[in-house]
Length: 251
Image 1 (cartoon, helix red, strand yellow):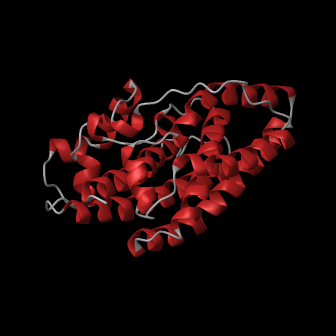
Image 2 (cartoon, one colour; image 1 turned 90 degrees about the vertical axis):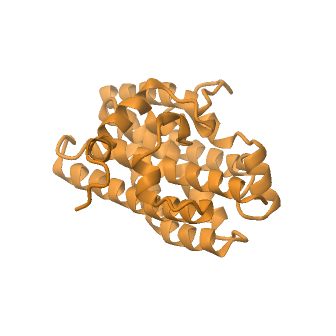
């Protein structure tokens, strides 16, 4: 296993949590009720905390003197490796919840597998993160059910959100040479191996929510190799502004 493959894998994990953490944080002060405002802020904090661990290890593996902060704030969009799903706009509350649920179901399955990683550093991060993500999944699944099986309006909004976000979910299970190297070394699972677990979790929740998944295998892709939508550029313009405008600035 080449260190370059491990670095690529670690940035994929860290970039997912970084970009979704930023997206979720945009709800702070804007959520529909106070309880959800606090819950979303806490979810964002969990994800950013996980980012520190993943990108910190990525910087260590890279060995070029960069830090987690450097990787977060000084890379351009083409160097980011996050899923397209996590950079999708928040939309309404239903769209945010559906995005979170579909990601949480994958994230929990991935972290559960990574707890058995042959790399003890990866396993240690996963063991810490999976406890937080178990709560994320429980919460997002519960809300998808409550809103999907709620009023006519809430059901319609959740179905519309599912129809939109579903077209980005398949990228989570695509594999390339990096994934093959990670699986061969026992560091991480083959992405495709996570799909049955994800489908079982998602299928049960959607059934309880009286929602119907689109009948298509199509998925937008490209984020994991640095090909992104315009949305990531706007995220980075905001997220990286301070470090770009005042290089080296610290608290």
